[in-house]
Image (cartoon, rainbow over all chains, first blue to last red; front, top):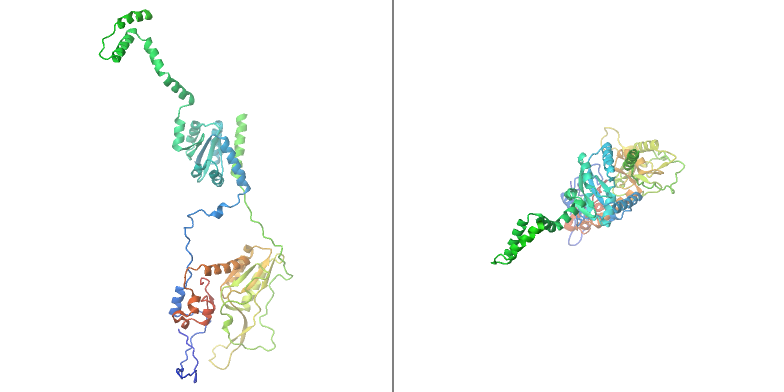
Length: 262
Length: 243
């Protein structure tokens, strides 16, 4: 409803070139302030639609980059204390294994701890926040992706992987994720392979056996029947001197060896 | 014996881990500058002002129109009801506010003050079934006109927002215009947000720019009031989303 209020004017402004009309119509619409929302002229509606607020678009999506302000948050005392504890644990222990625990009772956890305690393996609980703030600054930064979700650490001074795996077999809800054994990062498969490795004594024995293989073979050869040995030596000479006749030394050696055998 | 000791030690260690934690608490508010006046409750406001001779007044609806000029900022209190539109406050509204707020006030820790005056504007009404004409009607009641952005009631004391928010919201819902419960900080934040919006608006076309330079002859459909208020107010209504 257009509101055109023009007073009825008999005179009006009259100049030489233009003059207002003598009689003008008066139309009364509603007042400016109404209880209802007045219907707006279509042009005014269009104007309001065109001049709406457009917010600035962020250059990157909100979660794309980590916010810098968040990192500067001051760590509470407890976090700092736990960080020191983590540091000492990492320095002392040779074996660190990260295990995911899913819905373990307190009772089951206690039994697990008892079994591992017999092999001197300790279970450590550290909040993920503490690990995430400590690990990037240390040499173990590649362990960061392991600490997601509910995780628990098995630490021990001696790497006793076989016993640990045997104990873990009894609690199927504890899933082995990976770890760091004697300064080498190992995944789950790596830890299993490590457990299947033979012990040091067996490896040493194997090495010694391999080195003394040739000498032991010669000893066994000498202890066999001399006829066999003479035949072998004849064959060896034939190979070394191609196209040659068996030497006169061959029959001479036989009485000598016979003498030696006796 | 050793194994028994080991078991108890394990138990203790396990229990310790399950209970460890640290809660960081927010610092409590500092109420050093807060003074609770002698009469902390809302005072009674008269229905009718003390006139010897009551005069009839014109409607003058422009006292509802547009943004408020006075009583737009906090004086002594911390939390207030702020009008988000224009309207008339009658004695009934004021009584409702007074009774509800006074009931919930703890006079030792909280105080409340009016930021509107008692009704002074006379509203006339003609009798039922009267025909047009015959002069202006008689004065029926008095009202207080309120513009958008004005504070109605201010509450303060040694309290947090959460304590008074419930009562003030309850009251704000019953008012004849849209009203909001705000604290000093939130009011300042609202003003700042509006200023930021105006600064970082990506739309090159603003109402103010088009209206002031009369682009496309749009002054024909825009009133001078709209031009002055940049299209944020329409009559007694307020559009907070307009920039």
